[in-house]
Each structure stands twice: as C-alpha cells, then as structure tokens.
Image (cartoon, rainbow, N blue to C red; front, side, top):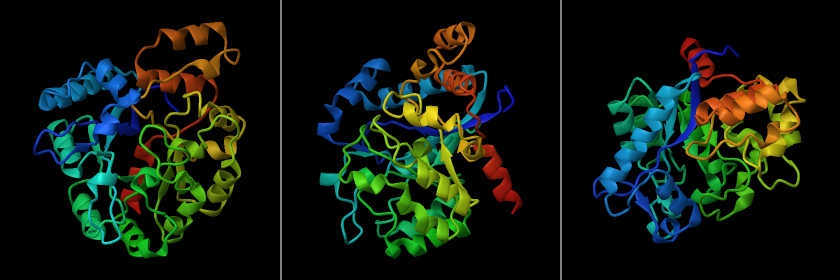
Length: 325
C-alpha cells in the first residue's frame, strides 16, 4: 500500500437526526443510549436543533477527512429500517434510520470527498426498484446490518434482490458478528456463512469488520473467512473497527495470514474511535509514539494496521475492476 492520500474509506457512518423532511428516524430508546449520548457530546450536537446538529456532524467529518494524510474519500453509509412480512417499514421495531435520499443529498453537496453507500433491507417491498434507483443515482455499494434490520441474508426469497445487485455491479457490504451500537434482534444473522447465497448469485460481497465475531474471546469466523475467500474471488472484507478491543483479536490473527490480506479493504467505522492498544509491545517505541500522537482517526487506522503489517487495499480497486468488466 502506498503511503499517499489515495485511499477510500468504505465504512463511514452518516449520522442524522430527523429534521422533518430528511427521512431519518431515531427511536427515543436509542437516543437515550450511552453510545448516542456520547456521540452527541463528542460532536457537540443538540437533538433540539436537528438541522444544525446534522450539518455540524458533516462539518466535523469533512474537517477530519480533508486533514487526513492517507484518505481522500469516504463512502457515506445509510441505514435502512425494519420491515414487516408485507414489506412495509415498521418504525416500532426500527431503532435508527438514515434515509438513502439524505445520503445522496450529502454526496451531492460534497462530491469531491463523499461517495454514496445507501442501505437497502431486501425485505422491503420495493427493494429491487430501490437497487436500480440507487444505482442510477451513483451508489458505489449497498450497506446492510442484518442483526438490526432483522432479515436472513441466506433466505432464497432474496435471490432476485441479489441478482439485481449483480446486474448493477453494486457490492454488498454486510455487517458481520455481534452488533452493539444498535439493538441486535438476532445476533446469529451476523454469521458470514449466510452471505453464501449472495456470492453464489454473482454479487461482490464485502464482510464488515474482517469477519470478526466481536466478543473478544475467540474468532469463530476465521475458518469461514478462509473458505469464502478460497471459493469466491469476489469475496472481500473491510478492516473497519478492527482496533476496537472487542474485535482486536481478529486484527492480530490476520497479521499472520498474508493470503487473506489481498481481500481486505480499508475502512474505519467512523465516528467510532481508533485505538492503538493492539500495537503495544508489537511495534517499535518510535512507531507506537507516532500512533499515539496521531489524532486523525483515518490516519491512525492506517498507521496502526500498517505498523502491525496488516496489508489492505482500497475500494477504488474494486470500483476500477467493476468498471472494466
């Protein structure tokens, strides 16, 4: 990986409070949660002034991204909601929703640094139409979080949805492992084994968080990562959140698996923090001090992972390959 400002961060969350017409939603329960209260405090956001808060979040993101030495662009991720069996949105079971329209509005406002990663729950009634709408609008991938959106990626009723993704050459970025930020309704839905159907239908799949389990104790999905990589040339994983303590073990595993590193894509999971704990005792004091002094989260993610000799690629490689195929 060249140490230049050329990376695309494929995993950056677009957070937004509902302002009346942006199509976003947050449940009162989630708004009171420790994580969201911390997010509001860290970015100096007031839920009583949603438009101001939403712009401030973007301003903070823009400032940090533009100051990065390595990262030039970020994929802004939407967050679709919970849909019932008839395919209609159920707000009672939806904790957080960042609308695709809001994602595209942000990208259109700052096209030099942002790319669109809308979210489509395949359970929604208009899922296939939404794939085509998002593709026409310039989406570079589709993001899902099965644990919170409560759908099983391996359910064959989603075959037509996956075929639409394959037709439009839209990568499918799916959360893997336990979900803590939002309320995981069924944690088993984060098993990467359930992504086989999408792969079989020709979709380029990106497993978030490098297939880490997210419970610190052990990495049960490492063999699955190996097998899916061996069987499917269009299977990838991002390195977002790998420096978090509960996912750090996968980071330390992958340092010793160079065969998997060509499948890793750069990502941070912004606005989450990037920790240097994994580097303690594993890099020189000089490198560690450099990581500690680096406050830019995009740059610290690069420095911690490269310092630990974890190789990775940029989403731009996939986008270029897709454009040429």
